[in-house]
Amino acid sequence: MFKYLMPTKVIVGENSVKENAGELVLGTKCMIVTGKTSGAKSGALGDVTDVLKDMGIEYLVYDCIGNNPTIEECVEGGKAAREFGADFLIGIGGGSPLDACKAIAVYAVNEPIEGSDFEMHDIFKGNFKTKPLPMAAIPTTAGTGSETTPYSILTLHKINNKQSFSHPDVFYKVAFLDGRYTVNLPLQIARNTAIDAMSHLLEGFTDKKSSPASDYIALEGLRIIGKYVDNLRNGNFTASICTDLLWAATLGGIVISQTGTTIVHSMGYALTYHKDIPHGMANGLLLGEYLERTKAVLPEKTKAYEEAFGMKLDDIKKFLAQCLPCEAVFTEEELVRWSEVSIKAKNVPVCPFDITQQDEIDIYKKCLLKDRR
Image 1 (cartoon, rainbow, N blue to C red):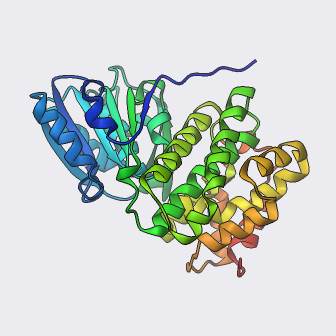
Image 2 (image 1 turned 90 degrees about the vertical axis):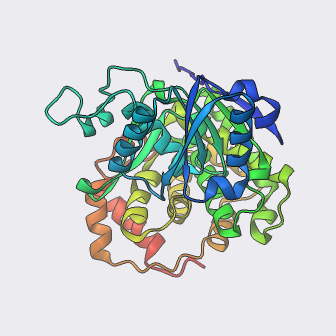
């Protein structure tokens, strides 16, 4: 038995925002949640504000979202939305603004008050009474798939790590995928985000919660990314290629919405929090060894994803190493300390192979304490 839920409408193609203006507007007063520069540089913010102006919708641009947003920043965003009187949100950006937008949608209508029945950290329990504001998503990177997941990953300083919350009410109502918004990304960001999408597709395909539906979608996403391996190596992109990569990332989001992620994510969070390594790169640094261990227990699935991607596992590992020039330095003490947290993650039980803390330490060491090239 398996279940499948995907309530987000996805509109794919160039100029999709302006050509589907009626789908973008979900209320009468809008707060746009975006990064300090990404929304404007991509052109997405200008397209959105043009539509809102044409349709007479009052809006506020809230461009206070940085990389790896904290829970406190999202509480402030919720306060801004309340004070403005927003009745819907539009998230524009990569994973950070899109994830933050979900938390802001909750806090906008559920004010966190210490000592009340809804405090700031109760969001991680899904403990809020009022449904979040409706949201539209416009991704400007092709990686996280946040536009089609019920997850929000936030930085939580009290645990010195990142933590996610999940709730079906924070699915975006609609998402717009337009490669024009990602075609001019710096090459390393394009690589990091594509590998993030790869990680979602491969983790979802191999974990214990996978299903025939999620497997079908995962293999299609891997076929798409596999077509553009050379582009990710050399940086030769067109808007059409970028739209395809956005679609693959969205498929990755759809997959992990059904399956969740594996230890690649929970182990990777420490690399982002403590070493400021971008999320997709952090996943990619660990992905090859995860797949190597998966091969022993899922040989048929290994053959299936190799065929879809168009590469054997050894070549996939070489591709990851070529695209991820990480200069961070790690110590064994750090890796042991991080494993004490990651082994307690909720995605450990769905790992396709048995995993202990020592196994995680060994994976960290093999991936991070040697020259991967």
